[in-house]
Length: 140
Image (cartoon, rainbow, N blue to C red; front, side, top):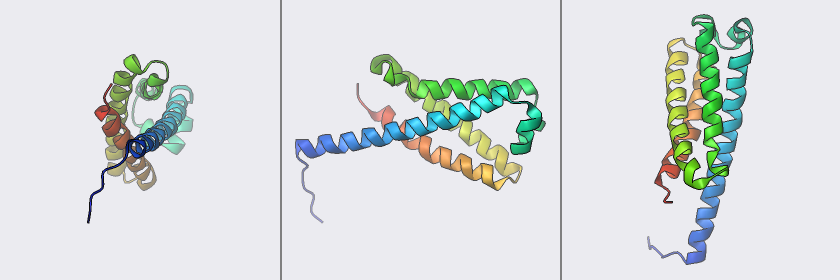
């Protein structure tokens, strides 16, 4: 197998594709967590417990607080749109928070033997992890 050096234009094109892919993932993640957070923050627990059984086992304030945390992290995931210099560290921090949240909820759903929400959290982890990894590696 031979390794061939890439031309500067090929390097720029690959960076553009990677950046577009990461922003697409960030946008989808932000939409998902905004919607999920909004539902947890505003919907009655009786409605939520039909979709997510764990909400019936914890205090209402915890569910609403988790919803507000999801909304905050989703907005911060898009912070570089306002300012790359100040928003990039916030975005990386938000990605860490979302990864931790999805991992914790994966264990909650797995222990409750709820396969569909567990698989959803696996998909979220699979989407957040590359965003965190690639964005944390970028230079300013």
